[in-house]
Amino acid sequence: DGGITQSPKYLFRKEGQNVTLSCEQNLNHDAMYWYRQDPGQGLRLIYYSQIVNDFQKGDIAEGYSVSREKKESFPLTVTSAQKNPTAFYLCASSEETVIDQPQHFGDGTRLSIL
Amino acid sequence: GDSVTQMEGPVTLSEEAFLTINCTYTATGYPSLFWYVQYPGEGLQLLLKATKADDKGSNKGFEATYRKETTSFHLEKGSVQVSDSAVYFCGLVSGYSTLTFGKGTMLLVSP
Image (cartoon, rainbow over all chains, first blue to last red; front, side):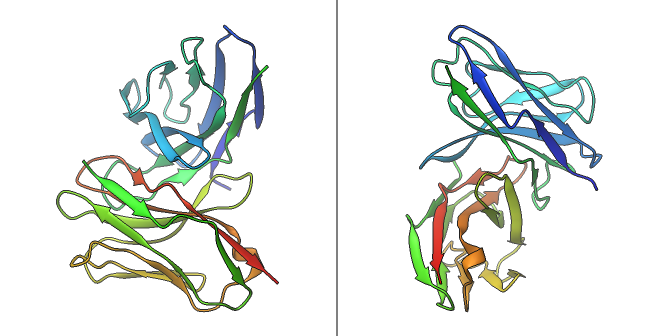
């Protein structure tokens, strides 16, 4: 079955440490997205990529970095510059960024600080 | 900029009750509108969508009608089940922008 796989499901970070969240899709989608979800705040866009080797900042990109070296992969690194990283992170993809294309979501990674 | 406003939850209902979750939006141009559902511990799933005014999206007994005159896309279901308990997100895409979500509304259905 086609879909989006996020790993790990749970991740713990020590202070001052960078961590990378994995997102892989086998839907052959061009566009991929990373969202952060906090209680009561809905989803906020961190980064998105419309094509391989290209990506754009979303609303809350500070303290995060991404790469898009392959169409099927869009890893997110939470750097030590992100002072409040505890959240639920969701990866999504869509066929392309046009107005009526729905996004498909992975099951998320929950990041906590030790 | 674009924005989506949803009614605050939780919405608490008994099984077989009628559900309405309000959603209004502000957008430039003619956005496409979506409802997504998130079950506990999972990602979001597309529930339904509408791409132009007066369109009605429907799925699994849920419906929403794109009302341009009131800039609304309210979600309704005639008879909810315990298994409908989840968080519901209204969203829009306008032009070539990315998806803008509301803050989500939690629905709790009791037997």
